[in-house]
Image 1 (cartoon, rainbow, N blue to C red):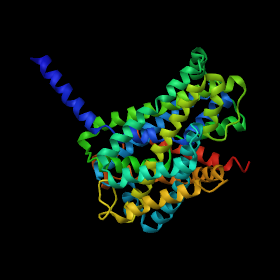
Image 2 (image 1 turned 30 degrees about the vertical axis):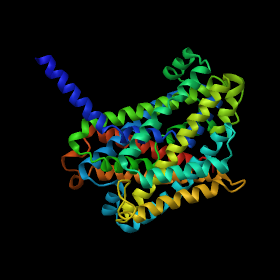
Image 3 (image 1 turned 30 degrees about the horizontal axis):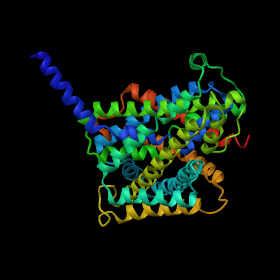
Image 4 (image 1 turned 180 degrees about the vertical axis):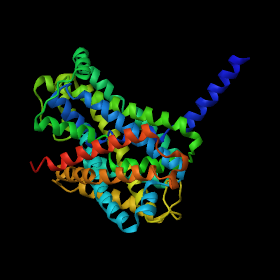
Length: 415
């Protein structure tokens, strides 16, 4: 009888977890976008396995930040943008979000560059691939519902595991990998430190915080769902780090050992893989890049349109109809059109656009993290669900480290 009751409780909890599953996994998976894949590929090609240790602090930072976003969303029922506007005022909010909007247009352009690059490996012109993907993304968001979109996003997250296949086909040295993680050979030169900053910094972007909190709200989650949501966050963070790990391993075990270090974009890594791991491994890598780019090219404009509209009091959300949230869908469409338009310009300075969007992200990240830490410790907003001592220690340490890394990233070119 007791065994049956336990089984019934387990099945009920599993059903609840599967129903709640989504925001954490999707937010984490989107982090492995075209820019992230490029960063991981460069790290593997240049430094082999020696930078794999950075994925451990990156994982901790990702879990801590996303947990706070989820908790704020469940307790307040409001998005991060809404809370910032209410507590910081409209003027400060305006300047923060203008910067975020510009950065995210650049980021979205980078994602469509990933679509174009990955399809070129399969012999498809960017003038065909990019418009078709943009139209498909627009139809999914404007004509679909949050439930349908979330299911597709979760399927995309699973497809990102294709990088595991590419890595294994490269025949990595697992002994060296274990040694690199347990006893890392840390260097103290400019290039190595810059790469470390890039790897950890690419894990947390400002827009992710807004998307995570808005996704929790759109799904209708409340604080009673917390124990299941935290597992969603942890699983999503694990999936993110696993994909990053295998991208580094794929490039380290093939490109690094053969002295191929020149990679300007993720497509270059896919092309360079072919002579050492075979055509199939190269195509799997390109397929992963395509999925990641489409995934992020969908989520980024959604997140941007959501938090900008939310910050200024407009209706927003995929579950809203076009007539109910015209500003949200207009902004979403405009971001897509601008990004696609830039990509289709012959010889567009895509590397420069990617660089400056990352610089803007870096400059705005400390502001967003500081706002989060102040909001989540405000008893008037969070009641009894403010950060406990452990959360504050980890949260502030994470914030301070990320601010330090961001400052170093912004200052390093000047030095």
